[in-house]
Amino acid sequence: MGSVVDAPAVVTEEEVAANMLGDKKVTVVFVLGGPGSGKGTQCANIVEHFGFTHLSAGDLLRAEIKSGSENGTMIENMIKEGKIVPSEVTIKLLKQAMIKDENDRFLIDGFPRNEENRAAFELVTKISPAFVLFFNCSEEEMEKRLLGRNEGRVDDNIETIRKRFKVFVESSLPVIEYYRAKDKVKEIDAAKPIPEVFEDVKAIFAPYAKAA
Ligand SMILES: Nc1ncnc2c1ncn2[C@@H]1O[C@H](COP(=O)(O)OP(=O)(O)OP(=O)(O)O)[C@@H](O)[C@H]1O
Ligand SMILES: Nc1ccn([C@@H]2O[C@H](COP(=O)(O)O)[C@@H](O)[C@H]2O)c(=O)n1
Ligand SMILES: [Mg+2]
Image (cartoon, rainbow, N blue to C red; front, side, top):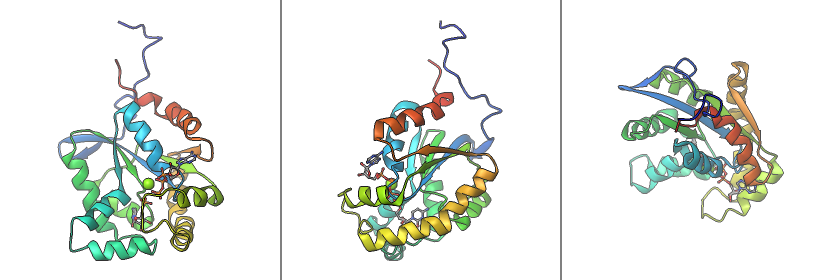
């Protein structure tokens, strides 16, 4: 058995918000940052190292379009315009995904995107995030990344990218400020190379390492 000194720090029950989803107590981290700041890239690393489930709101909306849902055309049009889909649609998808998954630790990537998202999620789920991971990056760097992403996304073109930046500044940054006022924001310099960003992310998630 390891000594107290070398045992990984583990978050106590009191430190984790008492968030129930059905009969499951969940830990939720909101992962925010501008388009192309590296949210998805770093979430994949966190999943691998810390056992969280990654739920990207954008991915869930894109899957909903593909599924032929009645909301598909509306969602597709909103994404093409860089607009934010009504909260009820996105929250339903997030809630379903969290209930379906056996895990109790979730990274919610790209949500809440505006005040309506934030307030509706709180109202519907009664879940508050353990913290908000904010990837801060310049528009110049994010634009370069998005134009080089090559994943065939309908919104990775310069016109839509500019619209997404505007929506981020006008609607999403205020949500980050809301959580900053509650001392819940952990900010990362996302302009650094991917491995360096992950070193900073790892330091933040260290208390969430599962005890061996
Ligand atoms: N730190 C980094 N340095 C350079 N390139 C990066 C870095 N992080 C991510 N990338 C690259 O930038 C592109 C966008 O990254 P990613 O998809 O993770 O961003 P995102 O924040 O999820 O974007 P979106 O909000 O559009 O979904 C990808 O091609 C990714 O490989
Ligand atoms: N809470 C959200 C999240 C995303 N969208 C729409 O999806 C687009 C792509 O999102 P990414 O996180 O994958 O970049 C985004 O521009 C919105 O149109 C949303 O409406 N609500
Ligand atoms: Mg993404």
